[in-house]
Length: 233
Image (cartoon, rainbow, N blue to C red; front, side, top):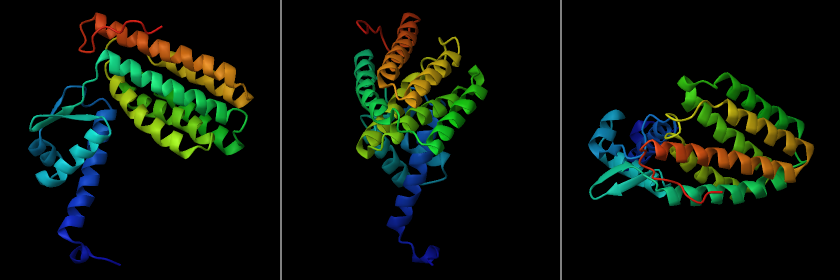
């Protein structure tokens, strides 16, 4: 077994960078940090009691994942334009259309129980004060459906896209009337997949996306930084 003296400084820095990456990613996906929030290396390092080197490595990895952008010598939680958001939703729609096609009728008892447990937790967290937890469960639901299809590359790509969707969702919080509608959508999607009905599952997904895009348009109408989303239907 290795003790601390056996770990090289470079390896220790890389491990710390992974911890910072995980912690900072969680703050972004919980909506603690919204699009446009400045992220200075020294400040991020202080949050995690680290030096700037692992903080910089973590920020660069988040940049590659599309959650952080570099602005000169500084970083910020990435802003996405209305067009970029629309394209991301369309990519998600294409991947999820395929994922429900693969998963429909293939769910075993353990997978069905797991997805139902996610839905039960979502129902319990369907309050404005718990939007961060609800968003995490939202992602878990969609990825659980994709995982049931058994296609690893699809699952990995959808995971990256869902992180960006979660980032966008931070701008729904101030205009959304509540997450119960999304929960109801999930229940209908799950029911169709469980019945082995990919056509209905895809139709429910399409409705689910349009609702989300409507919320972004509402945020834009209220002067949000996203700008207006046109031609989304």
